Image 1: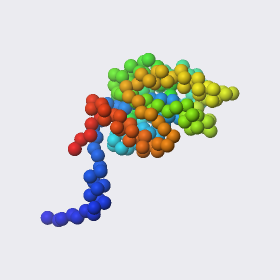
Image 2: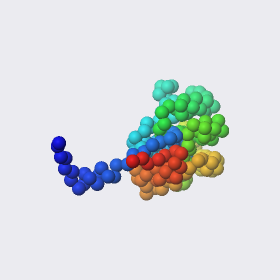
Image 3: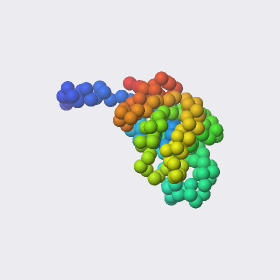
Image 4: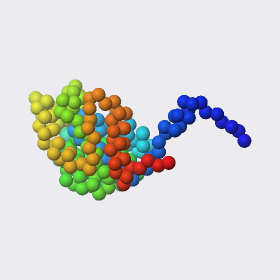
Length: 199
């Protein structure tokens, strides 16, 4: 029989590997710029589950950007497609689903998410959001004469709805993406019906 010797660092690395069982799809909700896509990808990698992005799915199916869909077909058309895509993605294998900033405002979407997954609000304050989105032109709702005022109005209107999510995690400007993903894991572990650490 062959004996395999591990260095101390390798033993520590193996001991640090954690294994998870995800029981429900985790649906990340929150404002544009909250970090849903970046944190979602890191979280999916950490839990070794698929990462899904409803906006990316819509863009791929339409072969155009969200901004182009808004311009050509309007927000109402986009929201209908968004609900269809979210419903389909929630039927897939359990994973991490990042949604657009307006998705959780729909009562129908909230019902679908509640029935088939668990919602996690990435709670970022307005200054942090503005700092992240002010130099990007990919946000159709911010294509106004006063984008900061528009963002503020959206924030104030949406926060009470986001606050109804099953769980919330506070975002901070000094959190790296991996740190934020770790905070989400800690929060999910408070719900054994959603996430468990296994031996």
